[in-house]
Image (cartoon, rainbow, N blue to C red; front, side):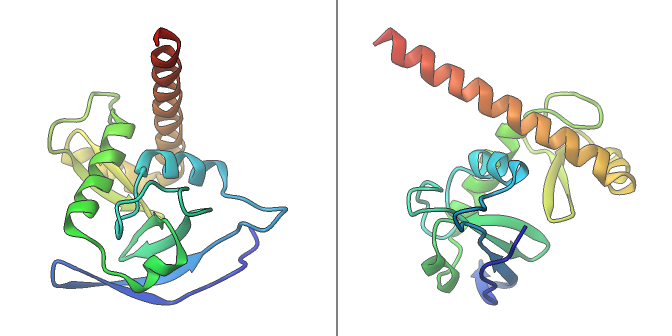
Length: 166
């Protein structure tokens, strides 16, 4: 991936300063978001600053907030503050899109535990699963990608069946 822009920024969330190490955008004519990033954008759905739909302002901007990689709707949001409400919605969207624990395959509980590995938040059914993910992140991040892809396919099928009913 070629980095076309790196922007150091800082964002304040609920009084806690979360440093955003870098914002990366690869939207030149020959580049676009990776498959993993495309799935994450679809799962995240909204910008944690404005609440706008990701993609509504052009190619979403990948940023690192604390240890977590997320997306903003535009470069202007790098100067904004993360909204507590939108932050909660982003994480609810990610948990819903993931749906299942990548370790045990169980449905996620209402308030799932989580871990962050390689910038990705991964929700789990129980605390012991976080240790398994941290011990073998590559395996479980691949499973997370599959869970996001399945969720995206299901959402597209639901939209298409709803459109054909009308």
